[in-house]
Length: 324
Image (cartoon, rainbow, N blue to C red):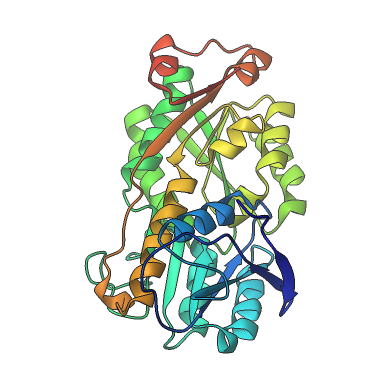
């Protein structure tokens, strides 16, 4: 495999990759913009790999323009607005990013990646018939996911009573997540203590408030800010001795206790398929919104030991990833 080539363009990165044969490809080179908040390049490399498998060659039939921004609505809107006239298709990551794209992009096709509840927040008319210029892959369209995260914490701590909920202010995921948790909380006899942050700099203060509020465990609402701040959140949860449940396995790898969420690499692979369909003439409104193909349960035994917790063997046995 040839070395990937990188060159700056419009403040972002144009990504090239090696040629994979596919007979009789014709047409223009589509310019695909990617706007994301995480500096983890693993996801974009997976998109790149899957596009190569579909026969795309840099400079021949596609060019990726990858841009990073802060995980705020204003930052996403600014970057998307500056980029949209120079691309043919936009890939945008996270609920904040997708909402910004819905506001800024009038007609060009948009593929969103890892968005919670796209119907409930008004991105699409329905999962089966998006009805506009946006489609893509959800992060979790089923409300049961947050109840399962709460159930996992209760399984680990049967006497659990007070659960802190960390959320990013202004993230449209929060309303959906809190509604799901509030429905489930009585079934597990727990009270919820919501704590909102505006930026990563607010995290330390939020954890101090959790301690003052006598929180016994923590659920983190999935979103761009909490994903990008995963290491900091894991460190603070451990420092405050809060068993934590997350949506991202990356946070558990960083020291969080447990996570339940989609395999993000597979989600990016699904996005590659939608890019291919749109390049070949499909309209976003014709492409049903997909849900993740697989959810991953991960546990960190090292963190459990540091918290003086013994995880149930039944939980460890059904975990997809056990970090020791």
